[in-house]
Image 1 (tube, rainbow, N blue to C red):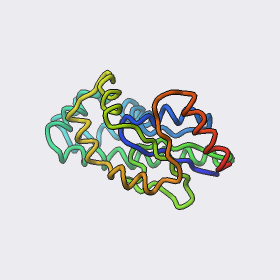
Image 2: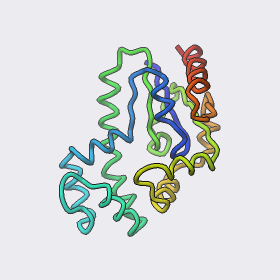
Image 3: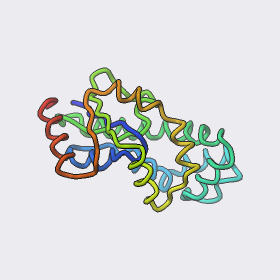
Image 4: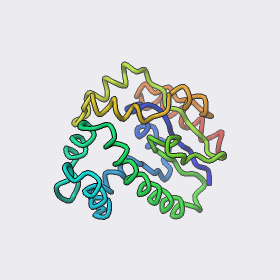
Length: 189
């Protein structure tokens, strides 16, 4: 199975591009949301580590935001609990689709969590930082402070770009993005 991993800045359009591949896709952001809303084990682990922030199940986004804003250490505590759960879900996904020719991995902290394998095809999604910020500000729950803290968790974009096999300059126009995706698929499949 060919693993196509999408990397780039927060808000660069990794999910937009992943949908164009029309392959089974592991979307880590969706998995994290599902874990927060369905996994009581994670809730109790967070409540134990950060009792002042997590009041009831399911975990609310406002509770996470408050915990992250209050203290920089809290984001690391949250990550230590949530990332192993995401890895478990990734293993289930890979097992489920092991007979497929290829899958797409839409994982924001792909390198940071050491999920990369030598055989993975890495695609860097590039956008201008101004366009990124403009798009992020349109998100319903955008919080500039949270954005800055999450950005600190990520490796430099220069590193990710250097490690990539392909670069898609994302201008959020479907036709151009689709052509880039088709080009990559023709080369790797």
